[in-house]
Structure formats: C-alpha cells, structure tokens
Amino acid sequence: MSLTMRFCGAAGTVTGSCYWLTTSQASFLVDCGMFQGNKTLQALNYEPFPFEAAEIDFVLQTHAHIDHSGLLPKLYASGFRGAVHMTSGTRDLLSFMLADSAFIQEMETEQLNRRNARRGRPQVAPAYTKADAAECLRLFRAVDYERWVEASPGIRFRLWNAGHILGSASIELEILQEGQEKPLRLLFSGDIGPDHKLFHPDPEASSDFDDVICESTYGGRARTRRNEEERREILAHEVRAALQAGGNLLIPSFAVERTQELLADLTLLEQSGAIDHAPVFLDSPLAIRATEVFERHARELEHLSRQPHLIDNPNIRFTETVDESKAINRIRGGAIILAASGMCDAGRIRHHLRQHLWRPDSTVLLVGYQAPGTLGRLLSDGASEVTIQGEPVKVRARIREIDVYSGHADHGELVDWIGDRMPIRQLILTHGDPEAGAALREAVVATGFAADHVVLPQIDDVFDLESGRLVPGDRRKARRVEPDVIVRPDWHNDAAQLLLDIREEIDRAADDRARKVVIRRLRRALEES
Picture 1 (cartoon, rainbow, N blue to C red):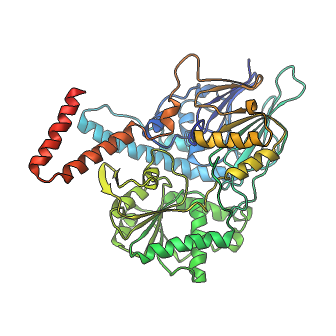
Picture 2 (picture 1 turned 45 degrees about the vertical axis):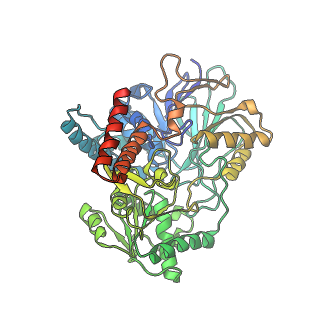
Picture 3 (picture 1 turned 180 degrees about the horizontal axis):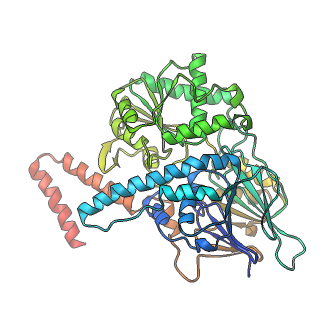
C-alpha cells in the first residue's frame, strides 16, 4: 500500500483542519476540525466524511480550537473508537468545548427545523449531539511534550509546544515502512504562535524532515512587533475612545486564549489608571469555563503567576445564564462586553450586535482573523447593513480593528520557523487563503528553497509521501467543494445582500407609486430569467 495523505480540510482555507494519512500499518488523522466561514463551507460539517470513520485507527490532535477539533464527536458517532492523542491542556479544554459546540449544533438545528416546518421543508439533524460529545471524551489520551509515543507498530510521534494556545502542539511523526531502513519523518506545525506571546514560550520543534506541513494563515502579512506595554497602550487607546463616544464597547472574542489575554490586560489597565474603571462583562459560558482551565494550568503558562487572577477578579462580571446576558441590554453606555464568537458567526455576540450596531455611539472592536463570508468579515469590509437572525440591521456603530492579540505567527515568523526546521525535502503549505499561501511560498523560495518542492494543496487533493507527488482531487469523484467557493462570499451571502439592497431601494423610493415601479421592475427581471 502506498503512503498517502489526503487534505480533508484547511487546504486553500484556514478552516476544517484534517489530514488523513494511510500507511501499510494504519489509517489515521491529524486533527478533525469543523468548517467555519460561509454557509457552503459549513455545509461540509453535515456531509459524510471522505473516509470510513470506523477504519481510522487513531487521531493526533494539535490543539483545542474548534476548526481543528470540532468534528471529533461526529467521528465518534460515525463509528470511530481509536485513541485521540493530545496534551493535557487540550484535553481539559475540549472536555467542555465540544459539549458547547454540540449545544450550538442542537440549538441551531432546532431553530432551523422550526423555520423548515413553517416553509414545508424537510427536517434536518445536527452534525452531532451532546451525547456524542460526552462519549468521545473517553477516547482522549493525554501526552507530555517532547516524549516519544508509539501510536501503532512502526508509527511514533512526539509533541512540541507550538506557542499558540494552552496545550497547542506541533506534531513530529516517524513512519517506518516494511523494508525501509530509516523512517519517513514528518512535522505538522499545527497553528504556530507568534514570538513573545502572552502566557506561552516561543514555538519550538526539531529539524531535518522529509515533509513539513506548515500553516500559512498570516503569509504575506507582517505585524509591527509590540512589547507588553505597547500592546496594552493600543488596547487602552481603543477603550478610551469607545467609552468617550458614550456607548458600550463590544469585543467579539475567541473564547479560548484571546479572551483570557484581554481580561488580563483590561484588569492591569484599570489598576494602573490607564483607563477608567468600567464594568467588564464576560458574556460567554464557554469563555468562563476556559478561564477556569487557564487558572488550573497557571504553572504551565508564562506571566500568569504575575498577572491578576482572572476568576476571582471583582472588576469582571461573569454572565452565564441567558437572563443575565439579556440584562446587559439595559446598560446603554460605559460598559465593555466580551462575547463569543470571535468571527461573529454564532453565540451571544450576535445578540449584542443586533442591539448595538445601529447605535452611532457604540463601538465594535475586532481583535482576530475574520474568515470570508462571516459576519465579522462583512463588518471588517465596511458593510453598511447586515442581516442578523433574519433581521436587517443598519451599521452605524464605529467598527475598529487591532491585530496585537493574534495567536498566529506573522509572515516573517513563519519564514523563520520554517528555516529552523531545515533541511526539509518537501514543504506543504496549508491553513491559509490562496494569497497567503502564495506569499509564503514566494518568501521561502527567495531564501533558497527549491520552488518545485513547495506544495499548495486544495481540499481533497492527495499527496504521495513516497514520491512527493500531488494528485489533484479524488479521481473517483468530484471535490466536495471547489476552491473558488472557499475564498469569497458564497451565494448565501449574495442572496442576503440582494435582499438588503432591494429593501433599501424600496425605502429610498419617493412615494408608493415609485415603490410599485421598483417592484414591477424586479418582477419583470425574475420573469425574464
């Protein structure tokens, strides 16, 4: 049997990380992530896996973010019963993150089925349930950093601290095929953290590999390096400006890591007098659980011992219940509200955005990557009106962005990380938009790396690890999604924008007669099509 790797996600996009490796000894996955972004991508979460789950022997998990781990319960529900190897930090985070993801699946499916019933459409099932999420936890196996573990005869791995979030790892892998004297050596970067990141050491790993599979999220994008004081001053400037505007400050924040960094810095800024004391609401049950895990792992995290305690901090108000979350709406100004999700695609932040986007005195501060097709990207791109929970909302709030809390290495740091892993026979760039991957490829080639040994795969491409040859797609069937659909708003986004444009055109009409003219033109266009 040939030694192959199929890119089941995170190829030509930053989401759905999943690599399926097949050897003569075993069939296994590196990551099993959920697709996020536009609805065409999200639909893949409900389709069958491109492999038989029951035939997967084990999974190697880089970290807990849902775009890397979110389909593990579905894998279990589909028949997988092997071990899932990860760090203890990743295990502790996933113990509640997967349950939260399942709750969202069930809640959104219930809402959709109510709409489908009214429209006469068939009912749909969630990608997985809370029971699936609970059951799959039994398969998790915690592994220490930098310790070799045999996953299967002839296959061993060890984990290196990737410096991205609590428990994140790059995975070094050795595969000894029958008849070979030396094993094939691979390295999966996972998500690589930036240098000098709060809570974590700089990312590290070994060197001298046959194949390195490296993320390219920030390929082509350089950040100005900021120390702790500079980072906090940038945040302080945004907070002061938002509160001076008179409204509330909304921060859509990723529940794991980003939220904890912001809480620590907001507390220090208030204690130092750099910003006025203001109520800080953490309106995310998931982020509250993650913060508790951070406290338990404080000894493993740099700086946390000298940072303020995050859980018993009287400046931070934790709102777990729905009623507590709704009560925040009574506060019209002077509050800081952190809520998930970071791309505004789910969770309580959408409720707060619906309440505040139309207010000119409100501020929305985006602090992380916004994938194409998400509500966060629409706001980042300057949309004047958006649709939230089926309701059009004018965007009059101040939309601000800062990039000093990114959990990803930037362009230069990625180039340096790759250089430190040399020599490398074949470099495979994944987990990035096409422009990011192309920019990183160009930079690596400029350092002297052979251009024909840098590969940019697409979803469902297959890579022959023995010959170093990329086979586009699956010869037996079409790709699950075409590459051009991934990197731009899909038809769902286009349809939502069209409805907003129609409503705006009708509202702009001078009188009822003019409105009827607009409607007749639209009907005529539909009849002609």
